Length: 311
Image (cartoon, rainbow, N blue to C red):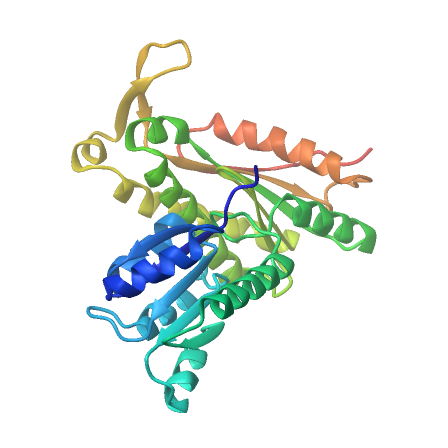
């Protein structure tokens, strides 16, 4: 059975929440928030496929929530529909300027709302084959991009990144908090590429805590150093005060023994076509995985570049 797509409804009117949930719950998984602040938090933690926002709410208006979502580099592709009891053109323009994908006036026809949701989700799926947690391009896009670059004969470098000691963190703090670390790692990666990379650089999310980025060989050192510095700064904030002070958490190793695990860190393996030639994407992936494993054996966050030349 296919997993239902998830819709977040944010409205301070309990009756509207009930009507919307009744209308949507047969076809979609529905989560609710009663104000803008709660809605923004759920949008960041629950990764809905679409958000429906009331225009006027206490604490944060729907307009403000939409603006915050569209400013977030990780959530800006999340579709937003704004609901309002007004029909003035100025409100519609404000909603669209804030980044809303659609605008519906209350009272609404349930069938019209369903039709608009289906249209927006269909367009979103078509436009972005993406990891549901980070909205970054997934495996199909990653393979296609690597193949495109190989075919073009241009020089490029591929970074394979994942998190160390992540399982022990998940075991203690839970998957929801683990997802927050993955999302923050994605934000750091995106910011680093935007600041230090080229306009045509690529970022993908393989799955779990594994990412890929593609840039020019001359730029990858600076990018890796920034990713590592930023991640090392933010990583301790995901732990409670005691674990942060200790610099480790207690957990079970693979043999079932109690052990100390350092705070989560990041490892990156860099494969570059200016060092050696590749004929297939699988070769790049194989070398990248090998280098990443070498980086993981080093203390704390680190990156390793392939230095072996084609013979």
